[in-house]
Length: 235
Image 1 (tube, rainbow, N blue to C red):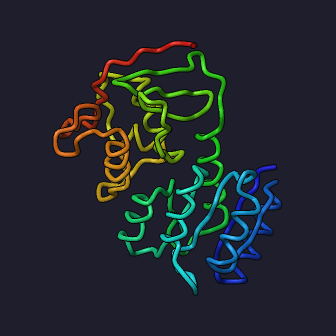
Image 2 (cartoon, one colour; image 1 turned 30 degrees about the vertical axis):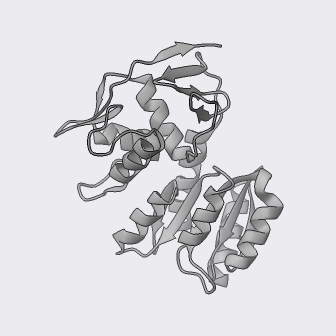
């Protein structure tokens, strides 16, 4: 059974989500503030499949918690944000959140987002295991990327999924709708900057110059292209 850790200071919301998600075969751990969340995170860290963070909390905020989670884990994170505040969404993504959902939302919508993230981040049995490019190695089985010295890159599940799609399609111009569908399971609106934020973050992790990127290039009016040579192998 997948285990989900939720932090929200509203008791009715916590109880509603716990009841709904447990009916859908998830194990749910609840926290009411940042302090209790960090305690539960320490207790359940290795067993967690996903974390849900409310931005507004009485003793801290979801951004600070997101940052702390990313210092110790790549577990997928969904942030609950104010419906009209784009800044919350952008900051959350920059800190390593995998998705966001705007308030007010329905438990059914949240469940759909949870399923989509867990489906995309599930460990799969690949036909090829390793993708090597400019000193980096992406390992599909272990779901990690290491540099030439063997040091792992700090990638979220969404970062990994995006990079995986790029290395599987080197030299191909990929439009925004394809990339959003691949990483988030939905298209983005014309004013949604979440994909741009994610690509900027991925460039930073790969030491790709943001002003003149050599790996992930922007093709104006068309999308993005992964321009590195990729070597694929089973070992």
